[in-house]
Length: 307
Image 1 (tube, one colour):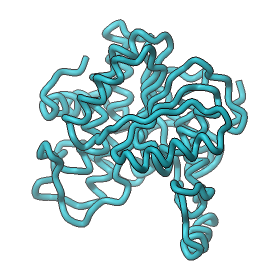
Image 2 (cartoon, one colour; image 1 turned 30 degrees about the vertical axis):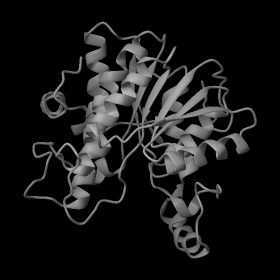
Image 3 (cartoon, one colour; image 1 turned 45 degrees about the vertical axis):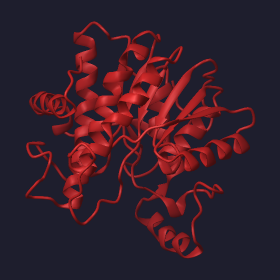
Image 4 (cartoon, helix red, strand yellow; image 1 turned 120 degrees about the horizontal axis):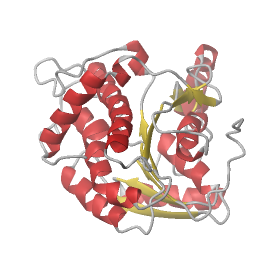
């Protein structure tokens, strides 16, 4: 069927959890899902910002069903606490792994658990959260996990052999590795779910293209952009940029398109912007050897098996 991101199918009765939902792509993913009649859980690190996002959605989507949950994906204790809450949900139709550090630090930082911070935030926390949420996903017919990848996987490559970057840290390398890891994880998760006989749970991957704040609609308390940034970011429209409201489209399609399947990869039609379509992923993203090594290393780092 054709897909119109502005006219979404009804999702009344379903529950979606979006990590990092208080701003940017996560906020607009949540707002768009709320517009379908679904209940949306905003899983965020900052309670005040989560509350602001919830109030914004309720003001922009009449009758929206939204709640918040505390989650710091860089902290495995917080992740495990949140996973307990997810397992207690009556149903979990989609877990959307969106939270992340977009602008890497110049110097290497580590999480409370001692892992490189960008890796911990963008990938490891989501790996552990998915493991903890699997019971709720498995008891919900047609449930999905959607991992947020990135266009950077086409610009930089990595075999993910040096996840911690202890002596070779570079901010953009760390960011690229974390997003490549998310894509590798998303495709490998779908393969393992099928192999384990849990194919009713599907895993998909999406990327937002080149989505920037200055082209994104103003949402008081959530996305407030200065006039100068509006002008600067507006110039980038000519090189293919789009707003984060449109950048959320591939993720939303991966979460609710009835014709989508496990292992699908969605992104903007014109690579950096446009309507969401199925796209080919990079060779590394679907490499089973890379996936096997990443999975084993991730299980060691979170100190628990996954599937």
